[in-house]
Length: 145
Image 1 (cartoon, rainbow, N blue to C red):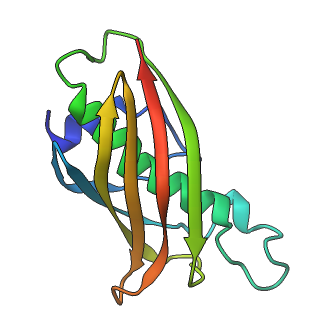
Image 2 (image 1 turned 90 degrees about the vertical axis):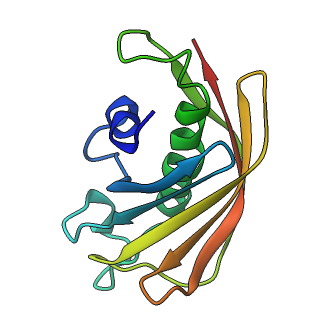
């Protein structure tokens, strides 16, 4: 499955799609990018006069690139655009180190910990354009048909 095919299968749309591109993907890892748009809904009021990307959005970005995209790749023989499937996050633990501001591009790097019975668990990290560690964590999810 190609990166473009994965992007087309992602079950998200604006304003809740947090993947611009998948740079690399294989059976053990994924790497992709996203730029947080200045006019995104979550900046209105977070924080007043000083917009910062909420941690829950950073976690969701790591999940979409690092877990969902990799899960679709791993299940590519079973999943097609014509066959419905359901995705759910089952657990997440994240530590945050630096803020992410409007118009900032981040890179998400994911390493598979395990994939069994449709459940994928990954070690995921996010880095900014300076390659500084923004956040990292362990995220797991399931794909069901």
